[in-house]
Length: 90
Length: 177
Image 1 (tube, rainbow over the protein chains, first blue to last red):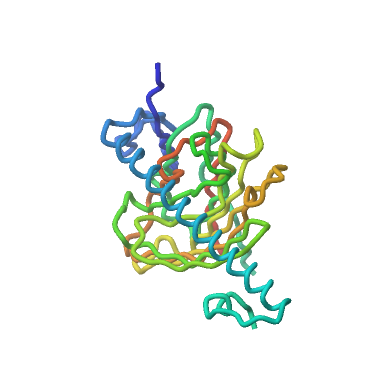
Image 2 (cartoon, rainbow over the protein chains, first blue to last red):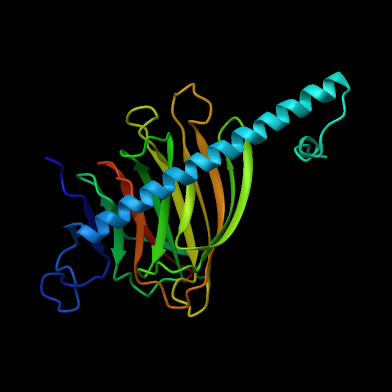
């Protein structure tokens, strides 16, 4: 059985949590099961975060390849492409 | 001469995994806020994850950032606006990293009770003994939030992923008198 995801809410107010009508959670902290909508939103966010991470990794790999190519061409005395030249710090 | 003080407002050490931690009803009696946390992501397959921060439940596009980050092999910078949260790139040790390692994070939020926009800096780092390049991260971030309401609640999560048991969160209030 899969556990229902939860969220933690902490009340920072200095009041009698149990008896103060202003306290929304009636305790120092509570653990609340996520609603179906919140679970769906989390799943979408996680999927988007993974897609973003994959895109960043791909971008970084491409940059690293350009840097390596630029270095090799500099050592060999060959002309760089403009993309390779852009990786140089002057 | 008045001396600055830093007071622990609230803390939370997770006894079980959770998707987010919210500090609510934050007292409006301090000048600045500071959040220190130690987290691990147990659902991401990546060696590092992103902690996201939202204020007052505001998920609109009022957040922007400039990020300088490095992973031990290379470094880069990115700037972006119209985000729906602040994000720190390096905060969590993902499930692909060494067991029982946690990332460390810190956010400093000046003038949180002001009725103007908010600026902040944050940093985070996740180190472990993996020999795989890119499995360690460190970063520093400049943050800007266009919300003009005083901050009364802060929600921290891992972009939809699950925060590990024993992750810890500390909220401090800072006064200058």
